Length: 233
Image (cartoon, rainbow, N blue to C red; front, side, top):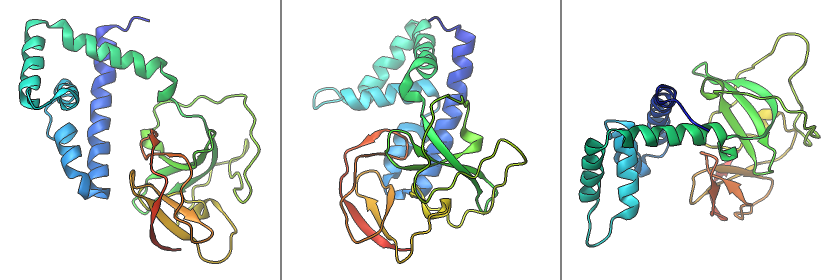
């Protein structure tokens, strides 16, 4: 599939704005990771500069430093004006075709945060847990014909008729799995454990730091299988 340079530029420009917004939000949630967000995205002047820096961070070694590799990429881009456009076209094609850029979910409800942001609450169809998606960040939705059985304690609040209702979200915790916000009727305390690797929070019905296979807040597989106790709800 060929991507027109103008279309590729539009896609990557929008992606760059989104990456910067998400990096800023992630930094506010996880200030301990500030160096990663600032070095990789927030301190970079452009999309291509961020790409060069990220690749250089992977290639650097004791002999060739990161700045030297970034400088080499920059010189190559100056000598070949098509290099950056080709990179943008490649990213645009991946976003358009790669199944990993799509997420099959089971939608359950809408909630509105204290700041007025509309959130779609859902379960991942691959059984990796609860997700909440900012409606303003969703670029495309495709309704499939794949049926699913509602999960216990999670009533579907959508209807084919009438208006959609988005009550206030009971709480807003970074990366938290909010089953109670979806209507779970579980009684007794809920024990919250935070993944030591990705920072996601999970609610357990009993004290148990063991975590199942899951994805990080960005949707990528996380290797963390143990959580630290954050408190009860």
